[in-house]
Length: 144
Image (tube, rainbow, N blue to C red):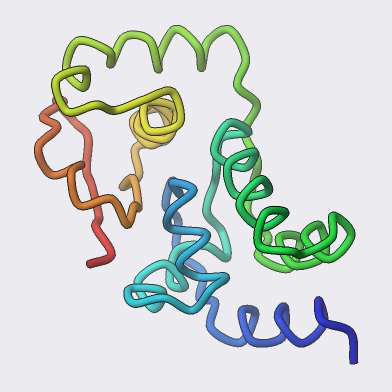
């Protein structure tokens, strides 16, 4: 059994089919079986992630020693819709700068928040600081 098959089997068994907008920290929590991963599992099977946040996930998994083919297989098993960070997404994320700047929220965070607002779903994150962000219509589901 390959490393990817073992990991994807573990993750796939925990998925349910609800919808959410995933931050990189949420996907990493699921993949690494960190505290709060059970809260991610109920969203990821039919969730969405910004290409910006996907890049963050892939980078962290590469740093942890996984090879790209393993990462592709693992993340493919999660069946998460990857949304492009196109011009509309860029404007939506940039529009959140004023409400997020004092809390140090960067491009990845704003991209996830903007995607969640666009889709009308909760933004799912392991970042404890997100609760300080107040944006009309933004629902945040923290893992821990």
